[in-house]
Image 1 (cartoon, one colour):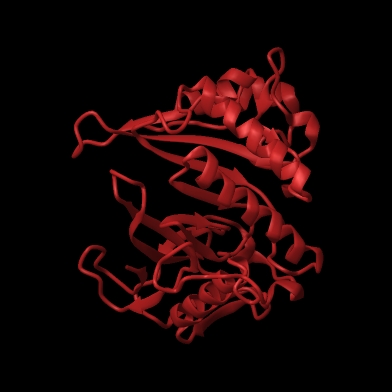
Image 2: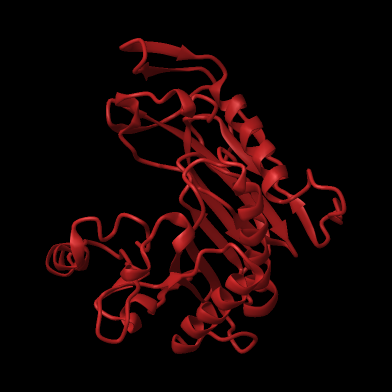
Length: 312
């Protein structure tokens, strides 16, 4: 919940409506990243792993000024809000962000290497559209640096990034998955079109991530493609599908849209992992770092019912 819209209607509405509504969510929902104070915003969600007795998955959520979040939304000991990191625009900012994140882990008794459970860090960072502006190339360097330091210095097992309205790239760093932008799952964009958005794939996806419970390394990754159909979330059940085209005010067939999504994500993975920049040393056999490479499976036994994108 630590994102650039959580306090859109002001702090009073946030405290009197948003937070109480989230507290009444049914089932086993966990809200992380926001709260009535910094201690509550920093509190980790802790979920027991049923098939691994005594083991847990912990999740914390942070946000950054470079995703459009005002610094005034930062929670304090006397003020509601969220955990806000500085804009990741310099080595100094990255160093400060790592320090704040370490403090969040400390108050949850999750400091590494004394932690025995899995740790997921959710972060709202970067622009809505990858590389639309020239400065995003530099911005991605700092986001990548921060993500690598999370793994190297704080023992994070999965970096779950979001902010971009489309799926960005993914990287495997020392066997740990970094999602630079999970894209939108539900949105209202099918009702209008911006010309500058046409270069980006409109499909979303459910991310199914399997980690080794002992060391947090990625075992398997599966993306289940989805799209919005008259403001309803719908799974893509075949490579070509019909969708609403706001520019024509009618449905059109998206021919092999799943393959296009796969190619787009793989392209962003190479960019976001820095593989298109000379001098970056990458061990393609699975060493320090590599871009996640997905392929399309028309039928996948673990997730039947339509095509999926798989890395295994």
